[in-house]
Image 1: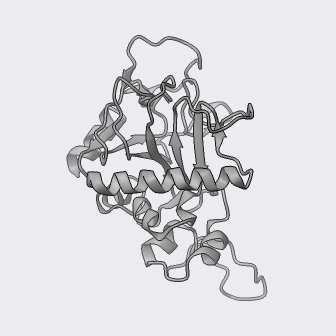
Image 2 (image 1 turned 120 degrees about the vertical axis):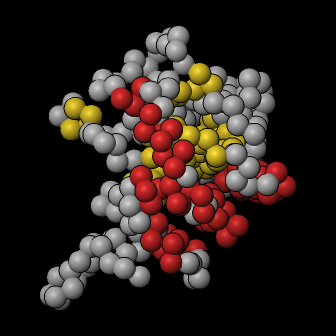
Image 3 (image 1 turned 180 degrees about the vertical axis):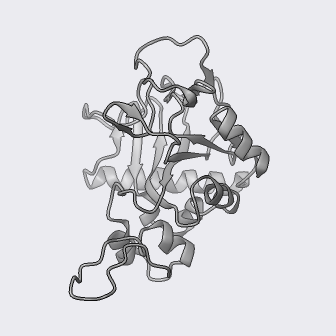
Length: 256
């Protein structure tokens, strides 16, 4: 773990190998393909013909929940942020040319060089408050749209130019089941789409006072009754502001 923390501080990212076995990855990919078809039948958003995006894929099956609470990742996030860290967003993404989506719909996220960190009055917040975790469910290689990064760029204070050709960029190559964790200030972008599939889970984590993209506590209370303490914590069950104002208990951060 300490090497991973050192790599994130120095290079902006670290790679954890063989976190999930290949059979589990293959089973999860099959489930994601099923979810895509279900959402298409319901005319729900799934991205476009170059980028499939499934927000909150984990609401479909409990087997996906473990992807958000991997032991090795949890240990690192406890050190990078603190034990009260929460989930900001999570989506399953497949950057490839497909004929599933017929309509020309803009697919948000990942395109062009960017960071996922936060700026105040044009200045980058230091240290970064968010970290991105990518779980490769299929290989990231030279034949598909592997994510590109610029090592050590998280130390820069300016933002990257979205369409510039940075010569010091590199592709992240991962075997299925591997995980990459990187500082949200690291310059990165999605690779160019090919005809080869590349399913992966993209999750963003931050301190407990960060606002999530969705009301996870309400969504998960409806989807699953039996959540672990760790799952409840990352889904904001103990960090959602209280609705009662005539009580002495108005703490936003509560321990479950």
